[in-house]
Image (cartoon, rainbow, N blue to C red; front, side):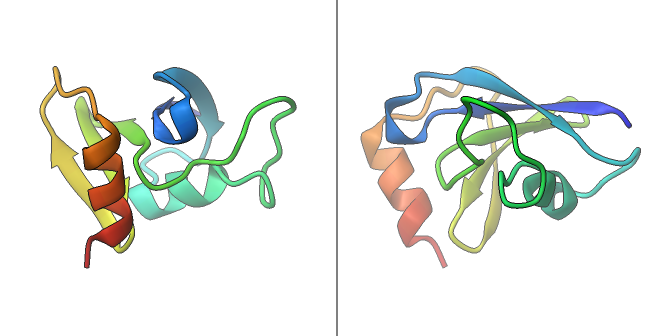
Length: 89
């Protein structure tokens, strides 16, 4: 299985990288599901949450409450961005 990367920003994680094992050509939804400790646990690492950023196909997507939002390669979320991710529709 390929390894995808997720930048953990929510909960003060400061961009720690979580490696996510998911099928080749996985969608963002599948990568997100494989980033959940209920589905694929990783010791000493929290699950992917709103405000985190999944690296996929050369781009970065912030997890929001109802899907994903494309963000710039140099984007670093602050507390307000993460809160907006929780409140997005």
